[in-house]
Every structure is written in structure tokens, then in C-alpha cells.
Image (cartoon, rainbow, N blue to C red; front, side, top):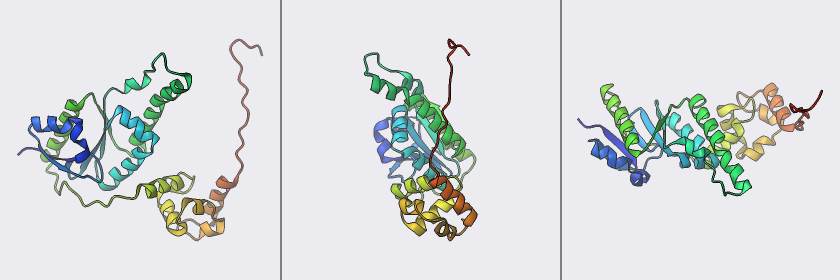
Length: 239
């Protein structure tokens, strides 16, 4: 019985589906709400080229996609296709401002991948090219067959409004809030701006918030930032 893999329509030009078919997999195309490939009822895979990885970090897509993966699949996987070392390459004739932006890509990518692995707990696997990505997907699909994973490959998933997910991300980043309280804040106040300007008494009315937590949150939001100056001597300066 050949492995069956459901592929998002937008992956057609990637070359990966062609390699899957050549390897004997049964490929079905669909408009997937979550992930690029579904290889078993438990496993969905988000494939990113190195440059798409960087783009998805800048526009906020990466963490939204990871949130959706862990919400709907027990064993999500992120595959990075290509050599991440290209992010260190900076042309010699590029202007200084652009050179600085290009130099930021590698540390941003590494930090984002660390977040995916450690906070979302999604395995990150590297594949050098489309052919090896297909081989990896096929191996995962065959593993699912061996484990006799049950259930439909295609799930009925209602895709969340991306603005709502970004709003949740803003509120949950406040110390002491988290995902559940962020959702309750949005439900009560409707917008992040209104939630972040609510009084401690108003916040305390949210189930699970409490007055003490509300006061701590208000202190974080209302206290003026102050950065102490740090004196640093070079190796060539005297005491």
C-alpha cells in the first residue's frame, strides 16, 4: 500500500510533489488551512525555504503557523529546505545600511528556530533540497503506516483570523498574562488597545486574573522605562 500524502496547492511549484510521486507516494492536492504537507493523521509539516523562513519571521507568519500546527496536530514538524549558511553572505558592493540588515538575518533566524523548538516544542529538520525534502516526507508517511495511525488525513479546520492571532500574541507577551488570559482580555475588551489601557479594577473582573495580578500588570505597563548607563573600558584604557 503506497503512502498517501496530502499536499497544499501552493506547494505545486516547489518540485517536492513531483519527487514524491516519482518515489511511489500517492499525492493528493488540497487547500490546507494548516501546514504544507499532511503525512499522517497526527503529523503535519510546514516546509520553508531559507529565504521564506526569513520573510515569515519579519511579517509574523512563522509563529502564527506554529501556533496553528500545535493546536491541530499531535506531532507537527517544521522542515527548513536549503543551506541556512547563505544568510551569512553579504555582497561586498552593498550599501552600509542594507549590509547591516543582511547581517541581522542569521541571528534572527537562529533565535526564531530556537523559539520554534523550545517554546512551541516543534522539531526542526533541515533538508538540502526538494528531493531530500520529499524523501523525508515519505519516510514520515511510511512511519505513520507502520505505527497504524488512525483517522482522516484531511481535517475540518476553521482557520483563525490572522489578526486575532497577532492580537493574542501582543497581549500574551505581557508578563503575567499568557495565552488563556489574553483570550479572555480580548473577549472582554475587544481590542488590544482597550485591554492594555484597562484599569486594574477592570482587569480584576476577568476570571482567573485577580486584583493582585491586575495591579502587577498595570505596574509593568505604567512604569516609565529607565536604562542605567553602563560604563565600559577598552583593553587600551587605563584604570
